[in-house]
Amino acid sequence: MARLRITALDRRIVGLAVPALGALIVEPLYNLTDTAIVGHLGRAQLGCLALATTVLNLLGWTSAFLQMATTSRVAFRRGRGDAGGATQAAIAGYVVSLGLGAFVAILVGVAGPPLAHLLGGHGAIQHNATTYLQISAVGMPFLLLTLAGTGHLQGEEDTRTPLRIVLVANVVNIALELLLVYVARLGITGSAWGTVIAQVIAAGLFVRTSARRTARPVQRPPVSDYLELMRDGLALVIRTVALGAALVASTAIAAQVGPATLAGHQIALQMWILLALSLDALAVPAQVYVSSALGRDDRADAAEIGRRCLLIGLLVSVAVAAGTMALAPALPYVFSGDGSVRSVATVGLLLCGALQPFAAIAFVLDGLLLGAAAYATLRTAMLLALVAFAPMAVATLADHHLGIAGIWLGLTCWLAARCALLGRRWAQIVA
Image (cartoon, rainbow, N blue to C red; front, side, top):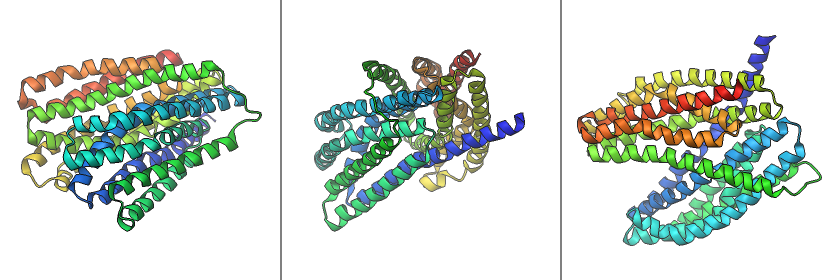
């Protein structure tokens, strides 16, 4: 009987993770397509897209708390049988996303262009980046509504619908960009408006789907729901900024070591980010099912869910690690014709592959603690992990001979520290 129950649980975990993985992968693939479309307009347009998307991605990452916190709150209340409370949590997510989205829109419109200039935009690149950002500002409330909607549906144990909506929006986006950029000859303006229209469509689909699933009669969320969401959001924003700081610092150190190290590190880091998206898909079922179990006050079930998610993550990461390390000597040839860069990238990819088990455990534990609403722990652990990253970072800056190995050993220490800190807290929660 226990064996059948575990098998059913494994299927539930994978059934939720696979569509979540699809949604995670669709966005980077769209970005690549968008880059290809704009890239044919010229160097200035492509340069402007690089600067503008850097600004927009930063805002998107820091706003992701809307999705994470809403997922946990909806799943927890559903777990305790409070359908009305789950609806209130979803409504609170939507309202906060709309208000915050309006603020972010103003921020992008006013502060985005100067920030693009600080990142190195000049002349035609700066002009195009300003145009792109000012148009993109219109879509910010809709982008944040999409985050809240994804959180609501994930909390309802549905990752298939968000995947379908994201696919529809991205297909519309690509079609509109081709039409507006090449047929209407609107250039970078057409690209920006195509993205905004797609964001409006995605937000509309999420809101409509959520409205169909909300419990009736709908009650207005109490003020405490809004305050808790913002408080939890602050902890998650700090966590996200700390995570980004480690990756940015690794690139900055590589730049100090030398051009070949920087180029090789970029190859390894982009591969790591791609692999991270794959492993991070397991954080979704970990978060949803743990929230639901704790809503039922069933810590034993939460512990079993955590154990199975961690085991699946570890098994997948071993396969990913083996594949990455086996391809490490060949992959750099896809990205560079420079022998020095390929040599550095090979070392980076070998270390990138070797640390995948640490990455998988860290990502799954992130999901488990999100499910337990341990946001303060996630914030503190990420900040302390920066301390673990620091010794190898400083050593590499002091001795450039450590090179790419020093940088990636520092990232390994960073991930190992997160595993230890998050694992300890998770053990306390399910004890």
